[in-house]
Length: 365
Image (cartoon, rainbow, N blue to C red):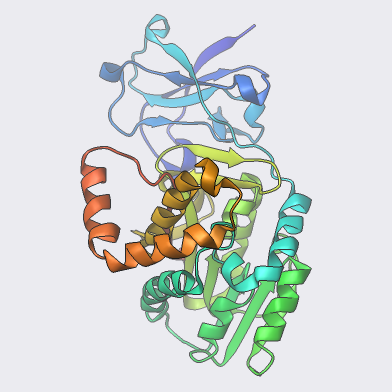
């Protein structure tokens, strides 16, 4: 039987503090039947409804099991339960880490393009370089504000694209990667760089006995379950020198959480969800920036995927579609990469579906 109750709680969810009452509706349910309690617009001020992605507060106790939580809403003190309604929400699925490792071990044959997810659509290396140059500018600018600039840690370094870049800026570069095949590719590419070390290890369990001026997590957290995301972020201050800087770069959706299962397992979270997670982890979020390089590449991916649904192209080599699409978009720049996406955004058209954001972070201390 479903139980609904109201509890007094000044401290909200995900670091949000509001002097209102929190409504908790809970029941043990399978993930596919999870629900979000939606309150009438007149009873809830903007921004005060919070989905319960695995965390809810009830009389000071934290519930880590999503299946036991229906929803949490920060609401006004007066609430008529008869005015509420229920609607489905998407719950985070548990990622199979062995499946993630298998995927990247297999993708290592195309290590350079696979590191930037350009291999499945046959996008040319120029697309990867274009995206990386855009990203490099954002990361370099934030790392430049670090107190010192001697060492950098790249967690989830893939085939070593960022360590290669960092090698000319830092006296010591350490990359950590779980996929053994990706580590082999990275070490091969970095063999001539004496100031770079690549470690084959699980980032969730790794124990390093040194501190770094800068730390990059470039597309790592979306391959981790939420609890491990928080655990990894909470460990970062112990790896960071005073005055150090952290960059998180993650693929995102515009709202909520979207898990993807099968051979390629990932959880796409909204920038708002990552903001909540960062707050729970005790880190200070300075700002969030849209990744323009990723946006350009994702436009190409969306167009290629649509074209490859045509029977004449469905069985063809991906590069036959990928290369000309990328060349056409580059030739039409900035129309293709700025003006059209801006118009679609103003019209409320969420295209392409995926985005990517930088989260520029520092230690609270």
